[in-house]
Image 1 (tube, rainbow, N blue to C red):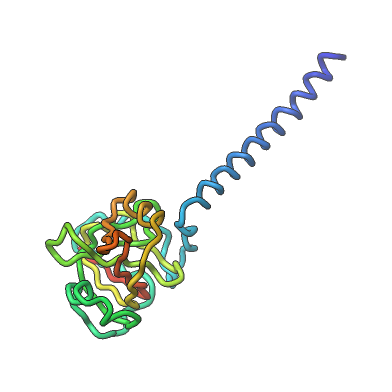
Image 2 (tube, rainbow, N blue to C red):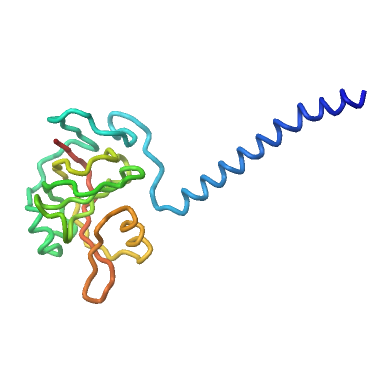
Length: 190
């Protein structure tokens, strides 16, 4: 009788302990995500874009995320970088090469003029985090439409971006500042 009672208790207790462990690890995972500024991946849909994934493997592909490009005034990326205050708050269309993209969720990318691997670029984020780009977008040519912003970053945000491989420019005072573009639509090509 004691053996039967012990066996029944183990049958009930072991799964309960396992379930408790799963809840604890789920809470730990959520806490770790909360430490990172990355938002949750958007729901996959044709309109909002799809959760980050690899780009098509073949060359010659075109990928569109967000809204279709609406024909905003085209501005050279070099001009935006040279005189960002002139464009601050304006909607523009820029073209450049994706130098780096967020490797965790695809929630940002860094655009640079062709041949510019060093120096400042434009950080592109996506309006309301409504869409992301593929994690392997680096190296693709991009056309991006959105609003230019000149932003001073917190030191922790700058260090976070740098830990993901981004180049964060600093002003003469040492504070991290960058030119950002909050995109409503993106076209990527290889």
